[in-house]
Image (cartoon, rainbow, N blue to C red):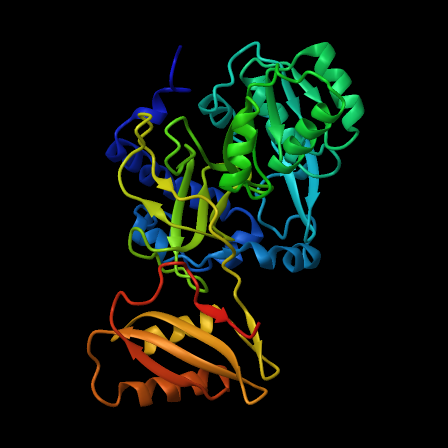
Length: 408
């Protein structure tokens, strides 16, 4: 059996990097044909964006900002450089955020994720992602059909009818949330219905903790996780190696310090930022709001692309303290003004029935009065007083938290 979807997955890391960097200028140039991107990237010379270092200097576009931007300039906030009529479908997802679907084969780049999970031509796939208004169902539907797999467009719910379809059509693969997979398996057990034909699954859209993974495995289903978003499609996916999630081809993944666009050191937890090489619907440094970290080396499965640890929480850690919102980007400003500081964490607690905040800052050296200077900057930036504790480099947890709200 062929182990890889195509040769792109196994090319050298250097070859892939050279290819992506060579394509960056054209992507930026194509994006800047759209008014939203022209404004967002004002003053940028596309030809100069030909390295990761140059890319990292571009501003991030926060996904959380898209609802307001699209409302102000419908339908897509000016970030699509082609006519809306050139797309095949138009969707909405919570926010609301509106997304178009291209007319090409597997336009969400999800087929290789299914292939990595063992899906093969001819496998009948039960797709339980929703087809109603949101793109989830179509992302996996188009991917399965691109592989040559017939699809049962089931959507979520109606378990009795789904069990009847499974008994009659014998799908060997499942796509959907891990929660609904368990619901189906439990319903089958309660109804004494045989669903043992389902042997493989690709799950996304909800947490898949080790306990649920073990239960699904014990019931005969080999399930793999996929990290995808409604606007970007599949960003990373799990393989048989079960060691992290492998970045998709034709996307460029960065991990940045939450609240900034600054890349973190390899292995540090930060926010996932993605650039997508789709000139019809380009994304350049889209900040997803999700946390992860890069894993060292290549996957034992032979795929050579960058690996991330999977979903590790949310990067939006805004806290309301004494009636004032404090955001991760404000804490990041402290590092810019005090280069001696390394990793930072603002801890929010309650003292004497009042909100209190303490900034814990890693610093190797910075002078005896550094904590006082940092405290002054903290107050200037947040308009709130807080304590500053200087701690040893490497002593703060590597979990991506910039603001830790411990008020209970």
